[in-house]
Image (tube, rainbow, N blue to C red; front, side, top):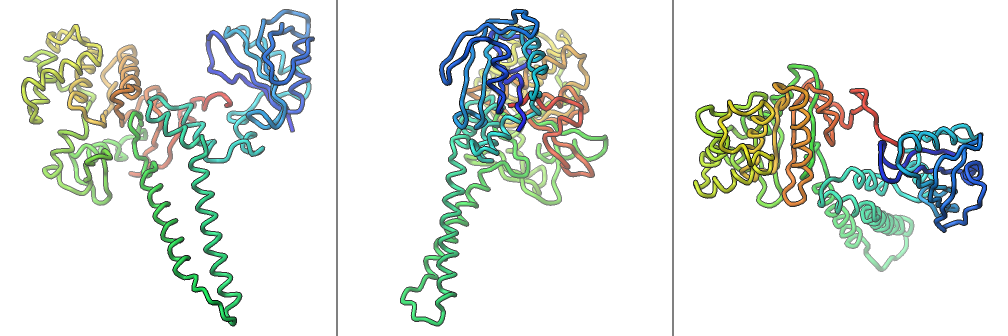
Length: 423
């Protein structure tokens, strides 16, 4: 088994960066960098020195003996100052040590799986925890990482094994006088497991359901149905088949209903952002937001309160009384975002939201989407259609449209984007 190493924390400048080494030669690698021994499980400050005697950094060093480590192998962690130059120097020295190589993406986690330190559900939970941006996402990820899902599947297995054993016993002793009829118990077990699995399926992310506080980008070539899909989800078009559900408490359920039958979807379920801002030029920015709420049936007083809150949320509190033509393109799009979120709608639909913006203004809209998704008090999900690879690569999930279907997800590599550092 190779000994691997990699930066285990985020790239870039930081107060502290952690370089992880895992494998049978982890201790030898530490000896090559520091002449003083480090006891297992006791944090120790050591000077790290290069092969030519050059002083690299003062680091806090941790040693973990197998199997009591993340990977289940001997592990050394070097907590160095988070300078790019320091990290590069440490990685350069490690790469020169015999039997050491840089870890592949996700290889630390893969070794933890292979050494039974994590099961597959915990691996997924770990990935979700790292990607979580809202409190709800964090709690859900911890639920999976803690083993709750794994424990549930083990329970299913135990019950199904018992049911199979009961059936086998009945078959094996068919010619004998077996006093107990096991059919009722077997049926009860099967029905219990069926109901439990159905409950999990209904609560999971199926059909690419957008979780609260998630940003999803739909990408693909022109004229493949991306905007049509958005219009169906937004209640502007009727689907030929299928079902859409927004919300868990008093959900809005639709899909094949005509647009005039899903008015509540447009009023309460989704907010729209278009490539063109669609602001009325003869009223102020605030009045544009108020008007959309009043048309949806909100009282004038409540509409003004919600509109002011929405304008402040998109950082336009000092531009509320400006006319649209007095605002920059990026600010006009922020007004459009305020109009879309003012009705406390859980889902924001964005059709080429940065199409008419310059690079700087487009980046500000990307940052705004992230802030709205990560809001701990009122997270909003964003589903957008875009041809902008930079915007798409910033999303939590990417869906590739091909022949009118979502052909793949998590396709950052399609844009040549890095899949991230090993974890």
